[in-house]
Length: 227
Image (cartoon, rainbow, N blue to C red; front, side, top):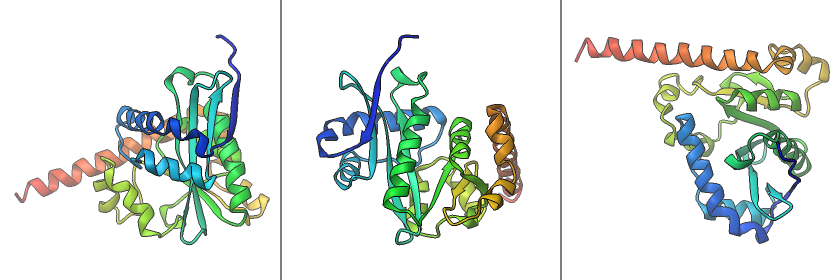
C-alpha cells in the first residue's frame, strides 16, 4: 500500500468548500450500512466549522480524506462525536481511528466536564471508542435531550427504538465519563475484552442485530393475527 501523509486539524471556515462532499459521503455510508441516522446538510457542517467543533483530515495535496464533528446536548452535560466519515479512497490507512482520537481530544478541551457518548452499529467504531475509554451502557445513561433523539427519526430502525420506549435498539450505546474513577471504568463489562479483539465487537453487533430484528418480526407477526 502506498504511503500517504495526512494532516488532521480543527476545521475552520476555510474548509467549507468540502461541506458538500462530506455530506454526500455521509449519506452514501448510511445507505451502505442500511441506516439513515443524522442526515446533515452542507450548511449544518459549515456551522460546525465556524464554531471550531469539527476536525478534518486532508492529504498533503489538500484532498479531503475524513471528517467528524461535535454536538452538545442537555446544556452541554453530554457531548457526542458525530458524523465520522472517511473517504472511500482512504479507508485502509487507519484514518478513522486517528480522526476519532483528535475529535475526542477536541471534545475534552471544549467540554472538559461533559460525558461523551455515542450510538453505533459499527464494530470498528466500538473498538476505537473502547480504546479511548468509552464503556457500553444502557440507553437510560444517555442524554434525555429530545433534540438528540429526533435525529434517529430518519433511521430505518426508528420503529424498533420507539417500540422499546427508547431503551434499546440495534445501535450499541457507549459512554465516556470524565468523572468516573479509573478502577470503576475498568470493572465495567466488555471493555477490556473488547479492546483485545475486534471479532468480539463484530459478534456482539451481529448477535444484537439478530435478536432485535427477530423480536421485531415476532411482534409484527403477532399483530398480523388480529388484522
